[in-house]
Image: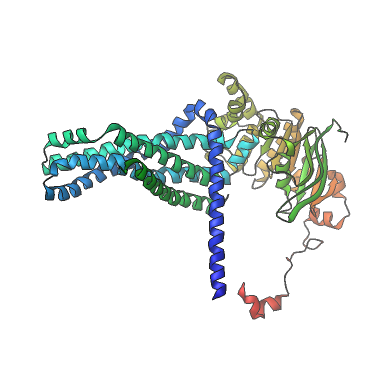
Length: 263
Length: 273
């Protein structure tokens, strides 16, 4: 019995030390990526190419998801609001939920699954096929040439995608609420306009998505860059990217929501 | 220590290993400018590690690695990159960038390391591709190339900046006899035409005997033998002989050390693993 307890504690301690070590390495790597920022941003063409690869190709999934989330919010929101005779506030409810929370969070989760995993797999495969070593031997820093553009591509794509998600969500809610259920279009829009504050709601939502972009981008490039150079290594890097990114997004969202909206 | 200007690579008492096990212990090696040197040895003996030490991708635990008189282990990133601009390395599978065409792969070192105008880069790239006989494949993507062609494109990319030193990691692996001979002759021709020095890590003894000036045999964590191809063919050392003849029996045993077979098969305690 005593031995089992010691084994469990030992494993637990090992896992904690492992995790902390990884966190430390990720922090150092983040420093390295930030350190080459000026070189990356000076050649902005490479960043836009990566925004196309990860951002533009995520547009479809974001748009469709946004539309459906908005429609579902309208159905559910209307169901609750009408009990209190407040159906006219549907626009406010949907807009605030989307702009403050669902837009940034769901976009980040979808982006991690769609683009983050692809970034990790691509960099991991480049590592496994010696492309990163070849680059180093050509005196080209792979952090500046490969990692940096992909990281900033994610950082710049995320708020744009989140904005699209929210816009499509509001449109979906309008389709259901106004066109289908028959809420007054005037009160739907005017209440939304009167209540949603640009700085407090929209900008905070955008700030969230920028932070999520940094988190997902960093996790994807870190996992890919440090993947073991084998098929198993690349597959575990992609899995870790999606799992850790999702958890990080939810955790960061909690922290930022408490800080921004607690009152 | 006096430095002979003719010596390009100078390894002096180099030790390297992971953890406590040493892969190298007291490796001494001098390579003169202009030579083609083949490095042979059993799998896992550290042939590729030797190239990585010279290229500064890893650092020796003891001893010094000097390239053109510069101690590689003491360089910072900037100094290392400056040195690497004068080195080329051909990786085992070519390591071409799969998202770039053949042309863009060869143009990569020019675009990243020089400020040359695009028109001049085009000329240089086409000349390098002509050297390896693949000017006609400039617009092709790497995935459409055969193994031998990919290796030749990677060679054109590695020699783009006219390096003083070329390192080849298993350049012959997985090639058909025609491509193999072609790559072998190309290595020798490029070395002599551009006044380079070349190190070839290989398992292919026949090909390396044809093109190398010297053959280095790594074993026992050090340079076991350092001979010309002619000396190697007539060597009498049993280990060298076994290596050259590819003999089944010799100083290198067929079996990994293990407990007696009967014990492993019938002893219950041994079943646990």
